[in-house]
Image (tube, rainbow, N blue to C red; front, side, top):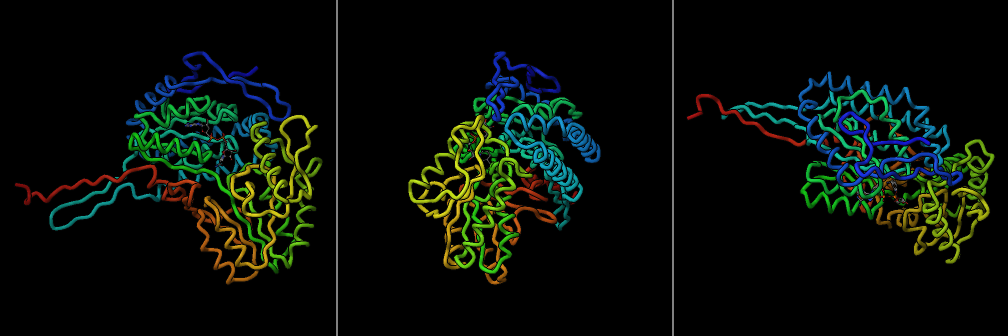
Length: 470
Ligand code: TXE
């Protein structure tokens, strides 16, 4: 059985206690690997290694630092198939989906690193009194606490700018998806201590969030844990970047191409078994097209069902399957109808088929809390305006998608308080993407040059003219 260790200061080391945790395949519940169960002592060692390496890393000329980071991206690319296989085994993702997202993650990482050349790390102005320089200096040591749904892309999403700006980093992957993170680091060519890996569960995560030697915590995960991370960082007067999931709304207006939109909505609801922070979690459909749309969505869902060309994998574990099952049961108890799907009690593993529900009302749990499963909950509305009002009535504010042929409706959709708004298509962007979650979906602007703002702090240096110095 494979065993994965921490990567600290350029060396693979077991947890100081020697303890391990099991990695379990959700397709059959079998243990296939073990990994270090780190605690505060291991976190401490990793932070010390990162701190020791940081000054020399920040002192490298930018070109050299960027070349080394590029070499790290190359090392991941070479191992993409091994990493995808690990993701497949640890959390059930189909291999093709894993490979596709590793490639998207790497492209985003390389683009973020390249942005370092556009960023004004120093600016200079001269006035009557003297010369004022503003330097964007690295924060120091960053902890990245990563969830299980996309280990590699989530690790990479902020990492490029953090490293390029001269920070060193300690990564803590989720205990539900650890092997892929370890494989991702196996050929890491960065200097020892620049990028460290601490494996384990919430104990290791908490130790990093609370560590006084950490200058920024980048966290992606649940709202509850995000609040605890922010409290811990606040105690140390440190910054946090938090991405805490969503309850993304979708509006399907009258007059759209129903077949095409239904296919997009099926993808948005079911890809990665609905375990995407920007999965479609609330679907508001105009009554004029509701019947036709529901029929088309049921047809489209077959693409993702067992035997379909994009058959989905199991949910990450039984705990997640129980959450999804409870949301569906609550909806049904309050009057929703299951048109397809629902959990098959006899199935082995934590499989949950694509599920379409109608008759969803705002008081249902499934209309309010993140489900994170392959469920499309539909509410039929009598106007675009009421759809927009319902879409906006959420504590979350991550993303939303609006399908409409009406320009006035698309303009009105821009009032939604979200970090990403997709119009007439789910996902993507062409060009620099900057965003910050609204509401309880998190905080901290990321993407483009904002990522460099977040990875640095401004420092002003003033040098008076010689004749003015007494
Ligand atoms: O998240 P946690 P879980 C949502 C989704 C899911 C729910 C729970 O709804 O059902 O969160 O998932 C580490 N201090 N999302 O339990 O607990 C932990 O080890 C510091 C949405 O996996 O938030 C892991 O590495 N760290 C999300 C990471 O935090 C701690 C993606 C996330 O774990 C910690 C995943 C602590 N006190 C889940 N306790 C998205 N936004 O995409 C645990 N951790």
